[in-house]
Amino acid sequence: MEQINFLYDENGSLIGRSPLPPSSSVLLGTDPHGYSIFQQLLVGTKYTIMLTLLVATVRVFGGYVFGFVYAFYLKAKWRKVINSIADGMHFLPLTLLMYILLLPILIAYSGEWQTTLWERLFIQVFIMSVLVLPITTSLIGNEMNEAIKKEYVQNSAVMGGSLIWIVLKHINPQIGRKLWLYWAQHIVQVLQTLVHLGVLSIFVGGAINFLDSPRLSREIYELSGMISISKEVFLTKQLWLIIPPLAIFMLLIFCFQKIADGISDKQLQSGGQKKRREIKWSYITRNLAKKTTK
Image (cartoon, rainbow, N blue to C red; front, side):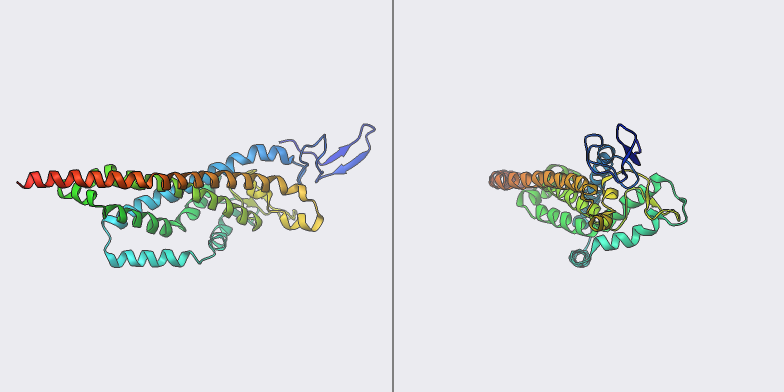
């Protein structure tokens, strides 16, 4: 990535030094290190989106797997314990908890890394996913419990349907759209969390704290790292340094929130159709059960 620390005019006179404000020669300006903000957005947006999608997917998939255990294998008292933990975690400052856990992993105060980049990314995804796992497990597990209570699902079990058959043919079709809704909602939550962690100087992939530099040196050019200098920006009034990454975050959050709203509206519209299909299937299974008992 090109670095521009000084800007000269046609006569060779110095007209500016980094951070440079937006101009015709430097679109969107440069950061304090002289790197183009526009180029950082082009390079870093994909990393932010990829990490966000990965964390949201792990959260929902993990919640689905443990929700399956929650719904089919756990006793009522253990379900109450998980629900109590999930309810309590709604009031915890999860961003602060993530900050405490990620700080010793993602910032190298010694000036050199003891772990690889992929190890740090794995740990970051793991921590950002596991902390929310009790909530997703309780949420998806309770959805599965509600699906199991449907009359046609119970009739299918009475008629000899296996657990895999019931899950694939009855449970998944009922909660499938809700899983997509939870996935979109978690994407919005992860994006918001990355903004908060960026303000707290926790970056995707980590950063090195060099003794001769007042700023952390990021390993990956991504959006949350571009927001870390927000305190300096507000003091110096150099707002062009954080407005572009914040605008990208706002755009991404808006887009995925609209996706979540669209899934939610579609689910409400199809609610009446599902009820009619459930009544029809219940009628069929009752008749079949009567014939088999004769």
